[in-house]
Length: 116
Length: 109
Image (cartoon, rainbow over all chains, first blue to last red):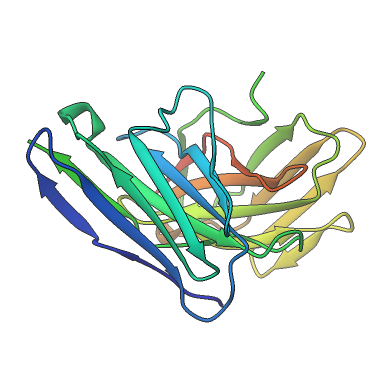
């Protein structure tokens, strides 16, 4: 199946700093990428949907100025957590699809962010 | 109401049992449907797509009822290695891929 590479897989940062997470589709062009957050023992929560070359669409309750998403090419999307706080510690996962085809989403390996 | 709802879990079953997962979706314009499996601290992985005609892959059977907006997954002869969280996933109208909350399965010897 298609491959989506996400890195870093794990990052620890100090409170107040920013962290960038990259998501790359390695063998296909992803028209749409999704960013999810998962807290321990909870389900995946969609944060935002990004289409190549346009602004991301954020889900209700997700601060767009805090979680900056860039989708500059068909193979790369980035999520930057700005001014991170301990409550931002979570598992962040990206996925990519070719829209509007009704195909499954392919997932990155996830990034475990710990803010200390 | 959530767009995708699943049975609350967890399910605790003995090896060899048959277990069924149920899922409903609210957007009648939803176009495609999947079951994913997520192991602890790992990313979700596609288990199988779900087709209107129903589909089977070994011990796993998925079914879709568009009229009732209902999806199911049946696991027969469950193994210890089936222990995981099972996620119902819907490609909703537009660009969104929406996940259910997941149902955790524990298969015990």
